[in-house]
Image (cartoon, rainbow, N blue to C red; front, side, top):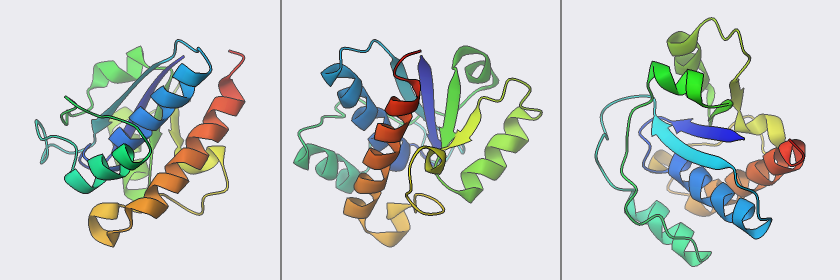
Amino acid sequence: MKILFLCHGNICRSPMAEFILKDLCRKEALSWEIASAALTSEEIGNPVYPPARRKLAEYGLSCAGKTARRVTKADYEYYDLLIGMDRENEWLMQRLFAPDKERKLHMLKEYAEIGREVDDPWYTGDFETTYRKILKGCEGLLERYREE
């Protein structure tokens, strides 16, 4: 299974999801390929936002070396699933990859009861809620696709 998490700038939510799911897969000895990318170009090359880095570190997760990159058309072909966080992400994903003939575009909320979306902590400042929603979504994603 190859999964690409997407969010606005690839400095908060999508890298948090990347490293949370990598950790869950490591604990279950699953060899999934997991990455993250931005739907916009404004943060390209920047490291994970410090509050997101600190939140991951609180849970024993490192995102050292991760820098923001922008999603490409080739990513649609390469990854099995491209997973966004909020309605804006969904809209941008549909614009970039329409038509989604292979039904690869999804939202994290599809995998767990986490509300309508994963709000951007860049604006809310609530990295704990973001972490918990992403963890719950990743656990649901793992549960759904564990056997594939």
